[in-house]
Structure formats: C-alpha cells, structure tokens
Length: 47
Image 1 (cartoon, rainbow, N blue to C red):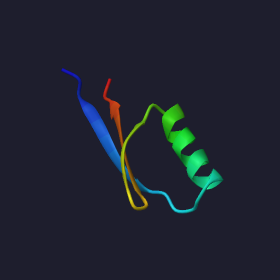
Image 2 (cartoon, rainbow, N blue to C red):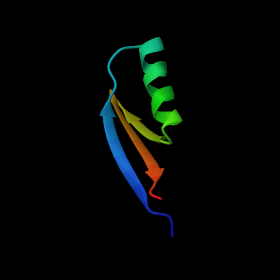
Image 3 (tube, rainbow, N blue to C red):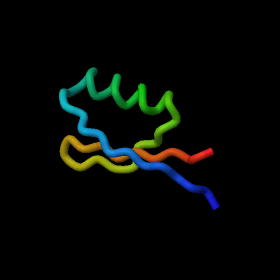
C-alpha cells in the first residue's frame, strides 16, 4: 500500500508565475491532483 503526503498551496499570478511554481513542485516530487480557483492540491509518496 502506498502512503501519500498532501499539500495545499495557493498560487497567485498567471502564466509564467504559475508555470514556474508548478514546475518547482514537480521537480520536488509533488504530483498535481486538483485545482480549485487559486488553490492547487498536490500529493507525493512517503518513502
């Protein structure tokens, strides 16, 4: 069974700012799960 940790982040801005932020989380192992308005929900497996 895989155990995940979750993170909820408000990403303000548009275009390049959002892209940079999402790419940084992706490089850290976070997977984008859902977006609701400015809130972005991420998960990643716990080792």
